[in-house]
Amino acid sequence: MASAGSPVLRDTARQASARAPRADARRNIAAILDAGQDCLARDPDATIGEIAQAAGVGRVTLYGHFKTRAELIDAVFARVTEQADALLEATDTRGDPAAALTRLTAATWAIVHQFRSLLQAAQRELPAERIRGHHDRHLRRVDAVIARGQRSGAFRRDLPRRWLVTTCYAVMHAAADDCNAGRLRPAEADRAIVATLLAAFTPPGKAVPTPQRQPTRLA
Image 1 (cartoon, helix red, strand yellow):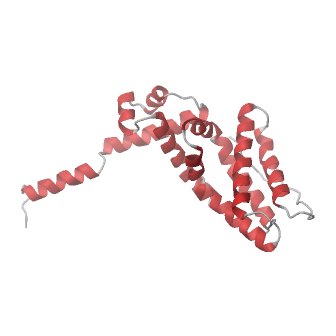
Image 2 (cartoon, rainbow, N blue to C red; image 1 turned 180 degrees about the vertical axis):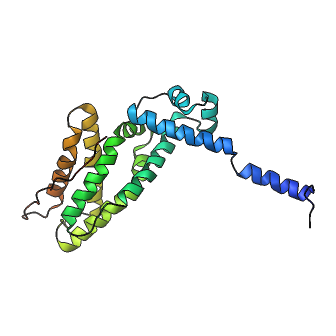
Image 3 (spheres, rainbow, N blue to C red; image 1 turned 90 degrees about the vertical axis):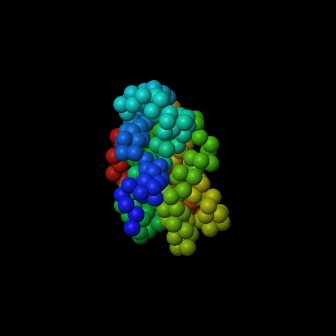
């Protein structure tokens, strides 16, 4: 057995130390992500200096973990996506597909509205496909509801399911853009989104379901 002071154990300890971030580094990263999320949710133009100050770290420390503002925004966006996933997991998507889509849309819009300034910051810094990639886990829920609706005949089958998913994604983001521009009131957006989607998804010749108002908490 190697002694505590043996070269083998010292080398193993050095390797373990190199692999695991120091506790203070982990705290700094968490503080930076917290500050980035708060600052960018309020102001899409929040600067690195403002985020560093809110995190209680220097710019040098922040850049030691995130080399560019785009890299920081990407990390914050990924973090918010994980948080949103946990919230949307609780949304009931069973039963009638149109009603399920309405509930899922209302829950999703509450999150998009809360972080629409962060979305705006991401749109300025990140490629469109990167932003879409962050939404993939949420869009899988939409895809499942649409697939069920197509099987039951509630949703049209003459268009590809993936196109209907893309339509849902595009309408949601268009609503966020219009709210940012003052063209749409956030409290009215979820109904506008659902009405648009149901009209687009309902098979030709079939009556479009009337959107049921869902309780939506907007920050």
